[in-house]
Length: 354
Image (cartoon, rainbow, N blue to C red; front, side):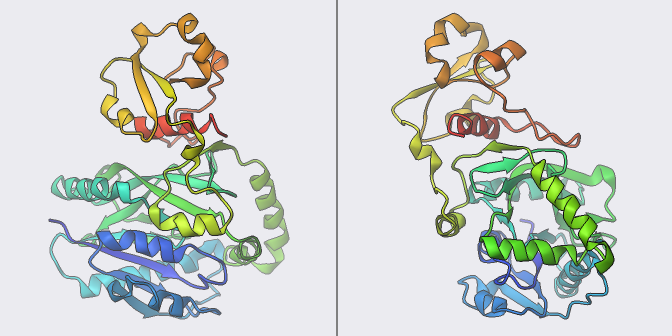
């Protein structure tokens, strides 16, 4: 069994309302220990970490941020590598892997087995890293951003023995990995960086730009960020949040279980291309009542009166118009893979409420 260790960075987590407690708690069941490069914070982030039930698993590495590393957010990768290098020095086990998580990213408990399985596969097949799918929540827990600005997937698990692998840039990803040695997982990282308490979010948005740009250029980039925010394209997302997020979601005034708004006694008709297409996955989207219909048995006329309850997994153009289905089969990035069947169905069901 491949051993897994976590590593991350944190500074001013309380001040900026990062969901770091939920983030680190979601990773804890997967790892032996979590290495946290804790920067010189202006709040009670360290005390908040010490109060977590998972604190015995946390290794704190107290650091001072060199704010001269402002251009391009380089301080984030520098701090990430502090945690990674400490992990490498202490863990000498052959075959150990590291899992990187940022303080606004959370893992869903339903993906634990997928993550463990995929890292095992990647290790046995000689891969150096595992890349995971992403869901980027925007302004609310009930919608995700899908336009080209948002990365559809990113590397979060790396083979520790490959010494050339390091965080770079603003710590979004890793370099020093052979391009053909990256394994793609169907597990999701839930990114909540843009759903926070209002004042903390505005403060974070203003201060984070200072880690990327010199003072004389801040006004220009504030305008650019505001323009990008206005152009954000979203689709509805209902239900299926990680359990560790429940208290936070309710605190921020969002609904915890949007799927309760759907009548569970109502049948939803799911049209698939053939009878065996991911039927097992689709049938597990509960608590809804689903009837799987192969395309050859589907008739627009027959189901026209029930069209509000018809989900066509891969609609033709005219079916998109007739059944008000405008959910894309992937995020808009050219790097995006198609949604897996279970997520595509959830998004289509969400659109009924959005």
